Length: 362
Image (spheres, rainbow, N blue to C red):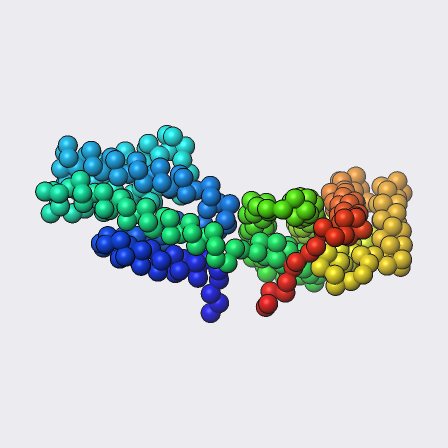
């Protein structure tokens, strides 16, 4: 079992919240631990972003709990109504939805003890401070301990899932895939693409504090955006091959071979670009590979035009093959653009553009 940084930070925030609450004489300290659990964020920037909203939500929850308890009492129905009003107000003023659990915890722990009616305001104030201590403990842990390395996570996510897509493409062009296995795997690949988008959003949010690092980070953002676009294009080719498999099998054998060889060249090109970014190869494309990619595209498009001109296939068959060929041409252009950006990244501003990708096991 592997303990990630967020798991460790959650545990640490709980420990700190309990110790501070005990030191301050606020009981029960586990209320602070509960709020610390809800307040942990996946990035330092999001921690900055949400702490003010969480404090506001905490104030709203505490204020409504006090007003409703003093006015209507501590009945379960009143607590439920207070919770609903709290959620409605938070949504109305457009605070982040992640601040709602903090507010609800505040409402429940303030209104959930009818025995405290005699010193209710003091009791409510202590409970409010306990929740606040938990939020602040989580913020401190987010700020100081184990800042997430989203650049490494993002690269490996893109690389690993691109390799998965490439394997399926190579099998698909040889008509060796199990249809049911691919059908089962495609939703997994789509979900992986969404996870990549989420990681990219977190990576963009990470803040740099030096001007040199800021410009390097901006260039990396452009590179990762193009890597994601190339990954999506490869995935779209796989889906297109799957959709038009029957028509592809009916094509002349030389056309099938052109498609297979060109996609073999392009997927190898794609893999080398990703390896080039982390320094595993010196050049993205050898002279032999460059010639194969360029000549392969010309042979593919020429052969595709000949299919219809020389009436080797019907118009409908030709139109069904058109999306496959157009996707391959777009994939080629996408990879050329990505390759140019990667080479530019390493050829200019070399002192600033430092890649810090580590292997997953490190």
